[in-house]
Image (cartoon, rainbow, N blue to C red; front, side, top):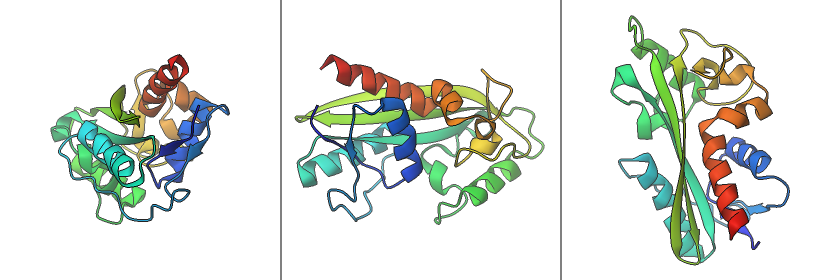
Length: 192
């Protein structure tokens, strides 16, 4: 297996994907290939953003790569924050600001159903592939747990009575949106 670039600057995502993919895969980060610029994410869909990031790296650096984009889609908010998940609370991409805004927007709303959706876009030798992972759940009324990152303290997956932030990394990886999409990526790469 040749080296694959993982087109993200988020070290939490790198750790999660590395745990799921296992030691037989060695990823290059954006830093490893000298990519220091902000990669555009201007598409109206999660899949579009994932493909845009992968295409950017493949076209500019000529290296096989994959990227992912994840969105939290809340029913009572008509699918928001969606593609704006990372910067929902403001341009600083602060997780506490994001959660605070989400909880405020849901004040008084009975329907707290939501889903996390991850799309991984892979480009190998010029061919594009996408892998999707979804986990359904509910938004809690207050934070629970110290682990994870992002919205994990307020997301309660339907498969568990623990928020993502209350789970171990291994427990979360088994049922998470990113875990499901990454498992599909891993299985695809193993068959190549």
